[in-house]
Amino acid sequence: MTTDLPDDYPETAPIPILLNRPKWRDTFSSLRIHNYRLYVISQSLSNTSAWMMRIATDWLVFQLTGSITDVGITVMLQFAPILLFGVWGGLIADRFDKRHLLMLTQSVSAGVCATLAVLTLLGTVEVWQVWSSAFALGCVAVVDGPTRSVFVNEMVGHDRLRNAISVNASIFHLGGLIGPAISGILIALVGAGWSIGVNAFAAALVVFTLSIMRVAELLPTPRVQATKGQIRQGLRYVKSKPTIIWPLIMLAFVSTFGMSLPVLLVSFADTIYKTGAAGYGLYSSAAAVGALSGAIASTRRLTFRLRSMVLAAGFFGIALVLAGVSPIAILFMVFLASIGFCRLLFATGAESIVQMSSNRAIRGRVMAVYSMVMLGGQAIGGPLMGWIAEQAGVREAMVIAGAVPGCAAIVIAILLARSGKLSLRFTLRRRALPVRIVPRGA
Image (cartoon, rainbow, N blue to C red; front, side, top):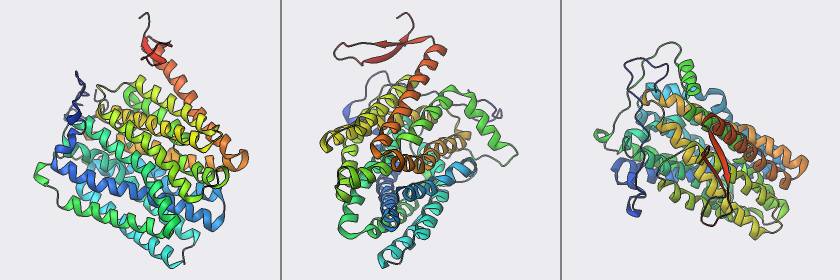
């Protein structure tokens, strides 16, 4: 389906469906491509270090002000530009060369991070400087996010796209869980400045790897010529396709409430279990273990369905609720691992469905909307969850963070079931999911 696109645009390729589960040696088959292998190496470091910096800046602001609300403001400034200008970033991604755009955005990122790292290491940093850097990096992400999503297709082609999307999403979410763990250790040993400095080095490394890619092996996406109404065209396209709009709706609830976990873990480490920065890193490591399992599981899926995405979101919410009421740290870490696992299954499923069901010529704008929802939700959720934690308590905030997306998953599952003549089936049989969505009457 290519709604609202000119006749000369390429057709949307069908979503690949595997008839047999991949062999273990094919779990990460997209890494056999030279350019994508270079990209993954640099992005693994870059994304992990980016999360290291985010956590370092959050902890730095907390040290400077002692306010969780101010930490939430930092998160908001990191993601607010995506919420405000995201669709324009997607349009830029559709119009220009993706590799050159990424080299530009990463060069700017390296400069911003290096400046903040020097100020922090010299001990002269002030809160307004941290906030300014967070906002600048958020502006870079407006273009960087959708460009990166489309560039993956140019490196691997359509046949390996679903595997590459799983690998790519795994890099992002694993970085979001491993990065804080490493950052917590660095903060405890040498301070926040070094975590920020690592991100400057990683951004420079990305620029280098992009510059040495085999350009002749890339599969360039057709560039869109500038015409009026292209942003409205992209929004109409998103709204018209159920395989795009439903994942975005579910993602809005998950990102706003469930992906503000770093904000809450700061308070859990500081006030609930009193483990400090080292404990903060340990909790993030527990979530990373679950995320790694989820990453491997996502690459071995036979297909991606809306119902499996919704179920993953529902279990993600349940795991957050259970973590919020855990009486001891060890049990808390077990549920954090479950959170990481379910988060990866949901994220890879949602992004794969959205990206593979969108037309390549408009994919930059589609993925810009996806980034707006995911990162913009965190921009709203950061200060919101910080405020709830201060007013009601951090445990209560964690329960709310899981209950809202959990309830949303139930509502969306019912709506999908009605529209597709499906029904929910509950079972207590062994070796079977406790809740399944099946054809009505089956």
